Length: 565
Image (cartoon, rainbow, N blue to C red):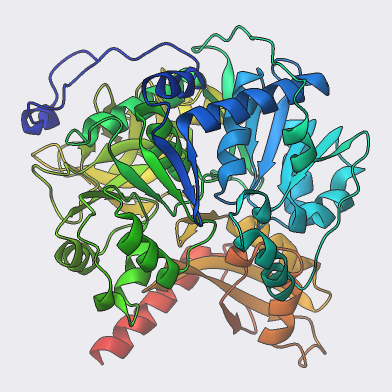
């Protein structure tokens, strides 16, 4: 990266301004860690532990199995799993076999899953047994050729593996029995098939894709972000530099962030595998279970999101657990409230700082220094080899220090573009710069701040929610005449989803409960509106466009009036 930037003056000696990144396929780092730390525990999952040698063995085995059932280089493989050993094994096996991972949210409903599978052209999917009915329903309308089904119990130690089916029946109201066939495969059968040896595939780290990670961007339809092996390797190595106190082969990382989200995938899974850290896998965020696990397993690093830290701090039994093992945390996905930062640092004696990233940037571009200068309320400074600037949206020129504009970034972690969507790629990529759509400014010290989003994306609990997608579902209801969705402030989730509804004449009997049930049948739970406001009309422009921003401003004015009135 040419030239000394304003923020470089704050870099500590331990973090170089620029470095050489390993131009190797991502999965080769698992092979290297297994060679250096073969007996080191790689995964801890509900009492089950696997060494790096164990993980590599299973990854190679699955890579061979995938090739034996037809996977060719460049084929897309959807992984629809929570954090569990299978999610790690599947991810690296797909890469080792020459495939491209398509991370798929396990909360997706049929319409969401069907769209992603069709857009990506996925030929294979790995899913949990309880999700198999959803996959089976959409399968005939997609290009899927093979489904590999696994269960949480497959990696539980005795007696948990015997007890879990009863827990599953209570939680999911079902036990799914999958009958293996020529195109439906049972994970245990795959593991027991000892005659599959994978064929080494030549991968160009700079050009070959490792991942299609779906994001909505500024339009309603989610887009597949194309990330290469090099994009992901570079961001993982940047992440290691930022945690410069960390020692390869000795750290333990809390894996609460879901790996199907790009932040958890990079800051927990990939970084851990690259540097021989032990990962503690949590399939879902349960504050009580997380506190118990921290107390017992003593993690040293804990990448997370504000809602995770808030959930722990508000737990009534917080003081019963020792969290002092935690040394360093970077918070992402949403703004980090200053009181959450100070309280969490108080109970752990560790450091918690705010960072920033996007799916299109693998994801991290900025963060405050963990053990050096930081500014509360700022997203920090650009990472090594990452350039950033604020662009005046009216003139198209770079904005002055302190002036508001759109954040643009450039670096080795920036995507190659959107899958089969050159128009959207050209809209956000200009001369190697990615225009984030986020509005902010840079101060005299070179620290960056995000003030508002140019996009209408709602970020609730770290999940991106796209208003248009929710609105389309609401419009499917026979009683809805007009609908608009926006994000409103929420003390726990950062933002939450609010729907403004105009009902058709004669539909006065339709209430919040009815619309809630309707949406829950068609959307992942985190996308379902939490607040409904029924109105006789919605504000519009002269050409009939609903003014979403005006509705939000009315709500903000009401909140301010209630607070100060």
